[in-house]
Length: 187
Image (cartoon, rainbow, N blue to C red; front, side, top):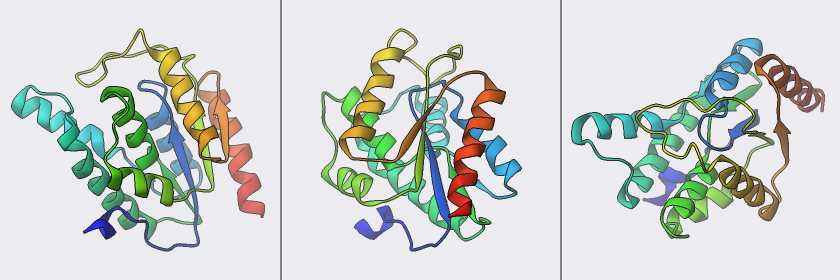
């Protein structure tokens, strides 16, 4: 059962956009994938939770986290096979773990936690909160951005993940991310 949360082996470089809601992760993922002529992995939780909201008028519940994690890894594993040299991930299971703990009083399903810590990536781009928050059906923490950013940063530090904080406007973030990715590609 738990194999569905595991990354399939691959030699490509994997980078993750990581951080609080409404910090430009999806836009940057798309822009990076276009620049490197590769694919990007969308955030499965957005599709899953938007569908839940549209059908039931409900937001995320703890029982949704494992199906979200499973869907995320299915997407990632599938798109890894289509990627060219690098895979851009709009999120990962570690981000799902952070949200689980932040929303459910520190709780994270042990299976989710195990694979969030086991799956590996070459670089994380932690997106800063210096761009305007945009409301949608799923976003709900406009006044909690700084605390959430620090939670994401602390998580990356706690688990010794290789990360860079991306600040500034869209163009500045893209150029900074490209510089770090180019370093990885040269190795």
